[in-house]
Amino acid sequence: MTAYQLISTNQHLEQVCGGLHGETELALDLEADSLHHYREKVCLLQLSNRRDTWLIDPLQVSDLAPLGQLLANPATLTVFHGGDYDIRSLHRDFGISVARMYDTMIAAQFSGATEFGLAALLRGHFGIELDKRYQKADWSKRPLTPEMADYAAHDTAHLLELADLLRKKVDQLDRSAWVAEECALVAGNRMTDKGDVPLFLHCKGAGKLQRRSLGILEELLRLRDALARESDRPPFKIMPSESLLKIAEQQLRTAHEMNGVVGLTPRLISRYGDQLMAAVQRGLALSEERLPRFPRSKGEPNPGIKSRIARLKGWREAYSKQLGLATGLVAPNWLLERIAEQRPATMEVLATITGMRRWQMGQWGAALVAMLANEEPGE
Image (tube, rainbow, N blue to C red; front, side, top):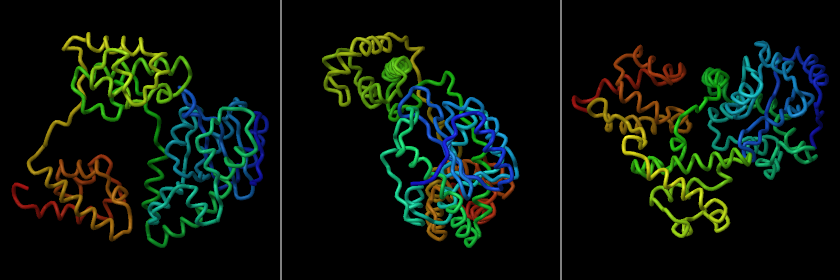
């Protein structure tokens, strides 16, 4: 068991944060309810220094300003593990920004670790086993069970010590600046507002559909989203995306036809069959000019781009093995595609490509520019 204090009042939070203003490093994590509700929210925050751990209950604490002031202090380094989602959620739910952060998952990746989940790292470095039962728990439920609270406390209780070990490894590999740059970028991330973006853009497999089927799929997804909002459940718990994709692709119009679709149980068809059929009919009734189009690439922006991407991937494979890092960490596919399209002839041009990091420029930028310059004409 990990010792912790539960903070459930504004006064208690203000008192604890006031006592932490001299700390130079703090560990932070959070738990949300995205697997259980339509609109996800942060349900618990775990905060640790090198001696103590606190569990902050934002469902009872109405003013998190003292914590926000603590994390916004440039003198305080906040340590996360896989902090991208946490950073975005803190800003979305509470308007909290983090001035400086260190991400132990990023550090583990740059240290060459092949397993960089928190459970694997705690097990490997400290012999601590996290109970996976609570990874998908509904953290909005109160009161928290002692087991859930203990699980949550473990997420930050050892994080500063883990950061120490990983920082040493990264320093020995002379990659500290790489990690610092990546962490600084994560600290600035924010949730994006989907606005009126079509729902099919977030449905895997939608790109293979013809326009009519795509229109049907959009109607089905809108129906599911409305049902999810009404019942306060995540859309995927209403019915599977794969089932809706199959209905749209085959343009199934009756409950009898839908009965054979994997994932659509008799209970679901009995409950939502009429609404599903009505959604299909709305999609079928769309005029040709109102049918949606799945966004496609504009084709090859210059000759030889496919062979150039293949060449870049071959270079990346060899270079990644040399560094002992995952290929996507050295240079993700989207970055290679941008480089292939623009074919930078100088370091100055390479630096203007969106997504290029300073550490990448210094580590392999010159070699890559030279390689592209040596292409045969027409490549």
